[in-house]
Image 1 (cartoon, rainbow, N blue to C red):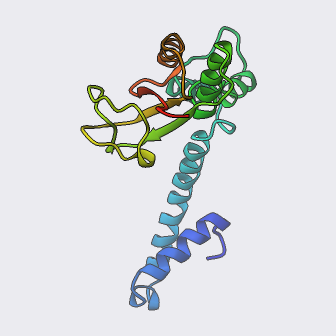
Image 2 (cartoon, rainbow, N blue to C red):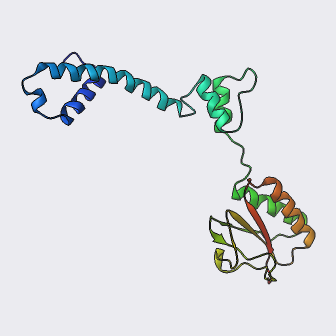
Length: 192
């Protein structure tokens, strides 16, 4: 159909390919009907394109951008432009990633005069850790633990000889910095 726009022509071609051939063989009314549907659905296509664009922070604006801010637990500040809000939403400060937690623990250990780095093992859902009541405090076989299971656990392994005061400082710092719902277990290597 020559009077259709490119997007409408795509829809018309798709419908014509999907419908039975006998429908178009001798009745021009069917072609006009499908072309009319293609014209209507082209406007729907444009609306869907707009909505999909708004799901991207860099393409959204106004109330759509405000919704992105709400989704990220913040809101537009007074007199904040769209460009400034986009920049703020895209440049999130690193607070709870493993490298930052490792750096935090290592800096605490250095303040106690311990130069050896810590180790952190992240156990995913349904991984196992050793029960607290057992006398074993060393890390076993890379993540497999006896006893009950817990979701999202971080096991922080401190160097041999770490004093109890350093352990307490690490525990306090990690409780402040870790993400909600994460369990932190702190262990000390039993041998050098």
